[in-house]
Length: 272
Length: 281
Image 1 (cartoon, each protein chain N blue to C red):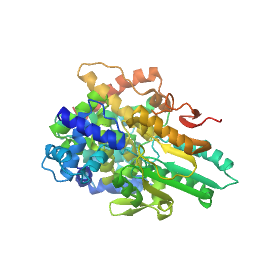
Image 2: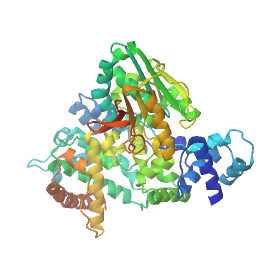
Image 3: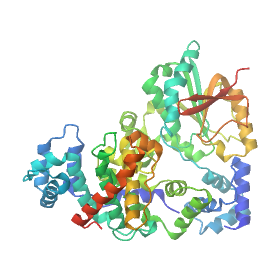
Image 4: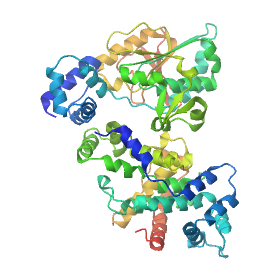
């Protein structure tokens, strides 16, 4: 891929999704766009790039941005955050919110739905009483296509092999052809919506738990700061932000403090 | 680039294991597995009967009394080992294939698989943690996914994988995941499911490079077996390298630096015995 094409794509992806593609990532752009070119019936990657730069705005730009987002996800990813939720965070929030009986959770990069559904299975297994509360789970993502898949709640064998214990597969999923479909009861508890984290956010309720794992790593420092500031304003006192294992609020937003639960680090807004 | 659906389809289209092996896996995987059922099934498979009796009377299983019947052989070896033997026999034709995309000449994948299986068989003498009986089969088949993945890795894709490793310092597995959205461990897991092998075998295969995510000791053991196999092969090539494994895995398995030091040479010696006996090398 030549420098001009790479610069065009990295500028597009940065403008549309604030994702930073450093020099050296040409291989990734080329690999991802090759797949898109074939899917969209272009004769070659060059044809796609020419159409992208010279053709009308007909949705191809959006597809390129979507292709460059990493939608890697799995059930109970990294497991330790879910252990922290089960052992410490949820018992604490249940006690604190007990009088209001209200809990709001937001997953800001829901991808194909594994993280939201993992959380809901955890609730059903250990805190089923929460479903009798005013409980909201909002799952958003930049990419409409992955959100459609999340909404459908259907997963391939490969996807259920990633982190989902056999016991939970049997309990919460039904086979549908070669796929597995999560129970309607869990599916209907999630509100799915398209949200670009670096553009305007829709209205969100005061939040008790925010999942934003393995997302900030793709953004510039400025975008990270903006996003963290918005989350800070939405988090209820004592609410928790869960980031990816290599992410932190340190040096980005000092209003957050680290809270360590065994092998998991979470963040919450420092008391005023 | 790779069509993920096609890749998964190919994993599910791999020729099945012999019907008797699939049935054996079902019986052995059952919570109330009856040795009589296992023996009866094997008795109908002449080739497997011969292999089983030979293995039960081999030096590794030796006792003063020779084994004469299938039932005695199953009792002496244990049902999981019997399944492993059947799987090895059924999977050998696949594992002997060339996989140029991974730099594997004809027979190289089979040799690596046997070395890993020998390492898993040797592990109980060194690990404080109990070694599950499925470890041998998981170790034997841990790289089976390379067979299918290898068919899809064109020079262009291999080039991208190479760049991901160089630019982003990713290991082979991470590069496969980033670019292909699946890695050879996951594909191997699909093949093992397609072959109706026990779920723990599937787990061991899927997580043999990233055992911390598998949450089952069989993942640690399959990882260990792979590492030991690499060391054995390096030793045979005249490159003596220390056995280096992830400290968390060593801790979970109860392996000390001393036991790790002893493990490699003993597994290597056992591998040479097995190789001579079964012409694996």
